[in-house]
Image (tube, rainbow, N blue to C red; front, side):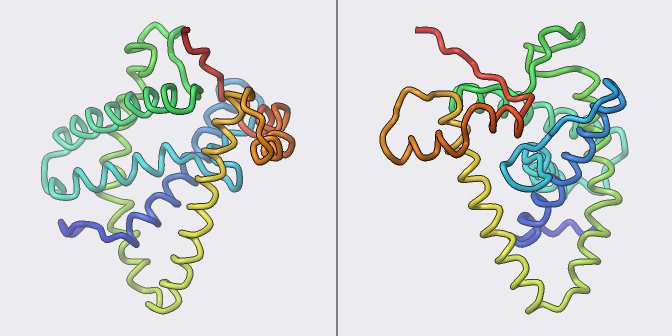
Length: 211
């Protein structure tokens, strides 16, 4: 892997691919643990879990210069960087959207209810895999695609993901607070009502703010 900084197009595709892989991993893991399939989407449209997309971006951006470091060094850095991102991602979701997707308060090895030690270690494995195996192959595939075709596809994907994220943010905020009912928000509430949101995001929990 080159130690050159990823460009904007790289980051867009890292987000998309990371989000998709995250969705697959969480769906399969939940089925292994509980024996049932549930919807693990993190966005309204498409099999995407954005926490993993952003996580992959942060790992590559913060660790691409340490590609030649020893395996254990990359593992420790991955654990620290990934866990920090996951912790503050949980805080951000709770205080901005008033919701929570993951909570480890019932786990013996939880850290502040927002982190679970075995999952923190998984970030180290993800970091090593991303740096040593995934990213080099990702760059080789990207470089083989004709530039014009790649640019068009990237623009279309960017527009789709931007609108998908924006709409998800809006309806999630409305899901956690139905009190404000002006005309535009009423339309959103009617289309993306509680039943719809519960089916789409079954693990999304509303955080009741203290008055």
